Length: 341
Image 1 (tube, helix red, strand yellow):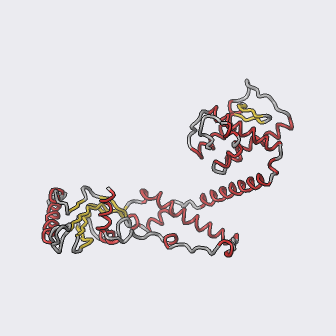
Image 2 (tube, rainbow, N blue to C red):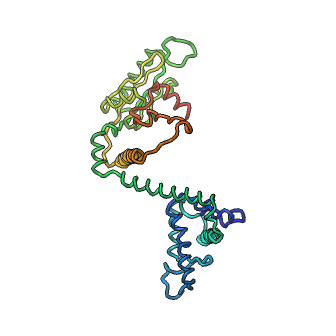
Image 3 (tube, one colour):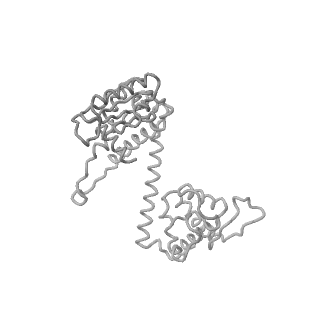
């Protein structure tokens, strides 16, 4: 169950309240949830003191009592804040949350009173939770240390500027029937060439070619420019698109069955500000991966291959960036897009 989900603890869910911390991301919540139990020991030694409702500041006002555990308003709101950060805004009222949390503390007190923490099963769960929390803390520290500086981001941008080139394209797809076979899609090659010439001429005159291709089932022309970053297009189209200048046409594919052309409406490079978040994440992942690999080497990790099986070598996709899109036929890509529409 989610601690913020549902209105109250039912009879069945009440029995599971002690497992709440396992159902939420391990982390600060464990320390927050255990704070009242730690305070309990100090309170037990000196005896519970009733809160001074008239003099205590609101943050220090006791708002929950569970046996000899007392929670102040500040402590309760800290628990709420941590849970909301992990699970999103609460779906229940503050009082319902308090009732659920009080039940958790009640059962935790009962477990401690009966020394359940000495049970082998509970000890194992506590040890696993502790290691998970420490692991998360160490990972968060490495992730923070891996955050690249502004200089590192700029340096990467200068060295990999081409990766952030962008082109706005109009694509022209023409199916042709070179054999004259009946029932086969496509127009005669001469007609296809004449249509392409008419489209190009219309562009020169300031048109968009839509009137030229209107009514033909054997032609597809992008109604508006499509924007692509380098590497997003199929390989052949990618190479042609980024070799052309603004206002130029290029032939991407020419077969007996089809002709594919592209027209470069605009071509430019995104500035570093527009792509800094992408670069930051990429560099952070690289540095974090390197730190984890170094830690593995310095720590020394060994697994019994006879028991676990031999390690699977990393695939090429895991070790090398995807430099270009798949090399499928441009026409096949377009036909697939049509079928999905």
